[in-house]
Length: 478
Image (cartoon, rainbow, N blue to C red):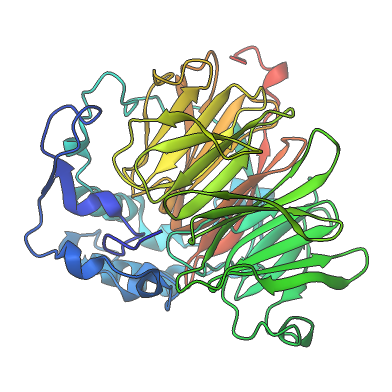
């Protein structure tokens, strides 16, 4: 992983546009903002560590925007976002009933803010993201997919789980193990949220003696994972910590990489065909390590030629790993040998997210070129379906629902998209409009609950969305 681009939700696409009209064949990029020095922005990953909680502290584009009379006569985008604390009057939990009665799902006082004020802010940010240069008229870019659907509806939100991020580019920080059990990274601890009892608790604090006594001091969490009774955290300096919740004890804590830039970028868990639970880590040292969760010994290491940002195994006992890293191309490699099987060509920047469709033949990839692309591993030379664009920067997180009917993807900030897969045509989508950085998205194993983490000084929350029962709807398209 390398750091590039400005803040504003890490909008990598915001300062440049593709000079050639065909984004999908040409990689010629033209810098459009003379004031931006990409050489000074690029550098070690250490430079991109988050040292502030939201973009209000680092938005360099302070263009004046018009707002309604009930707000200031004019304000910069920075001033606008900074005004939100005074416009946030609902600081407690927000229920479905509150939402139905007009309360904003993040507690923002929309009566004072005004819808046009919110829209103006969106328009201001849209002017900073050069999406027209991303060939909006290209037949494979699904920019005009209708956003008229509601597949998941708002159910609940809480500020008691105050989501945070440890690295600007890593957004796999919310995970669920059941409809009632959600884990999120909050101020360098893993918090458990019981969605049925509406109770929060800390299950793994990186500053606690149970972690620091293992020699892991000052650990900054960059990614988390959870499966059954195990919760896992990866760190900025190559750390991995695993806690068994049934035994209430740390079962593994160590630096798995000691290189100068060893970040643990992602942790994925899967069951091997032999029924073995495997923990798989992706690191900046270019290695994918597979651990036996009985002994936590490494039984396989795959070496790539670039920093590995995310890797997931083909479901149903498949033999392929989809690998995303500091390269524009994705890789499908043999899970045992690491032998390259397929190269996924089409993206133009670094890749940070992968997701397998549960049937094991379809893979989605999320990239810093602001797009998600869909591939059929049976015919990987041709991209399947439309190219799905984000709005405010890189696609950092992807999830298929376990029944394969929806694809969920998130921007760096402000938007989560839910696409109806259909016949792999992705012809309908729902947009969830938020204020703040998206720390992660997760779907419960039964597909009934979508949980989104939002990081914002005033409006940050953990938000729940319930799946609507489309199976009983006469308008069902599934």
